[in-house]
Image (tube, rainbow, N blue to C red; front, side, top):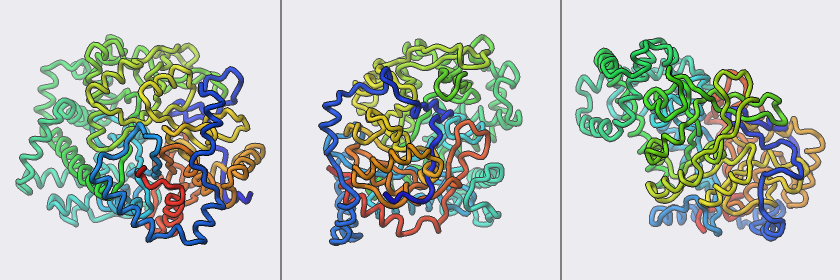
Length: 589
């Protein structure tokens, strides 16, 4: 096999999410409970070897015109029928690309939901891709991590497109004359104040009478989303007043949410509160335009919902009764994971944990509202840390390590039954990575949720590894890597020799050997029986370590990678389109 280029062993634990997927296997492991017979019976389905792909190309079967006709047909089918959403039917085969919105090209220092996002959807359409997956889109706080949002309901204001604000007449071009931003990395310290000034100008123009036709829509938006918007807007205004300090460091009457103190703060900060509400209105309005464009072009959107919430968020501040807090609103327990092969002390994440008894008494109303809010913008949701619904590791808040924690049951089937009753179809993908026990798989399978498989975790030499394609079921989503993994090129560079040999043997047996490591794993994912195959854009472009999105456990310098227009070459997407067509992943059964 001619694997070349840069491929590295991936960080086996994604510490930000407690992923322990790559730990050694043993006879008593509880990763999965499928019978060997069922595994063997599935191996042949959907196989497509490298030789078959090459032969099709040589015969001219796979070409751009054919794929575009197929995609036009797929788009018409999508517009005329209900789209195929999780759980996936047995005959469904599709593919997509993982790319966070902030990574899109833009002259404003960070990707947004404007013109560049529409062009990205057009690229996906032309490449035959049916899905675009992004990371969480909430307003980031500590470390600029999308998994530590300041609200489960609000969107990140830096994703608002200045170009569309100019188009709307709310800004003038000179209001956002671009400074010299990096084209390859997000400088949040520069971008956040730049975007804030632009939004302040847009809000001032609106208050001055520009676009009076939007006034009714804005007021309707505020009324519809008031159940979270009022608390969020006041929370953000107070954060600014108190220079970003944790809300527990605010005056006691605000921490305790004394009604008179909240009312006075609302009056004092009325202008700031109005501006924050208006920014959310603008973002939701632009996001609606983006989703409509995606649907018109046969592309569906996968959102990402963190399981836990940030300790310094409007979620906790406004709803303390839903979390296990003490009399001073400080967490009694924090989330983490127990000691394992990689960490003798376990991991402390610091997130407050839910009071599931309190949530159950409300019919899980807040949780369901949280899901409903995200489904406004996307077609399916990746449920981060899915194992938390079966049970989570609770650690006493004052503990110095996670050793003293214990497993506390989650809401289990009662939660998903309530969600199903309220929302109907469960349009979810279970991120079932980490320390997985049979109850987690049982919960996933009871509600027919597709699970997650990651090829970078597959090649430890154990034939029962659930990340090996031989062991997949159809109702699953396979990734070459995730946002917490290195790029596949970087992974291979650091991969130990024994795992390189195992990878090479496996690819040779599957008939997908040859070429760079990234393209080999993409071919392997696309040829698998999994209903949906997804690759990060970095792997599609065969980028190295410089393009990694996140290094779990590293403080700073994460979530910054951006692609440029020059990176989005036609050749890379033509190759993906040909592979998608040859793999019969057009998105329609």
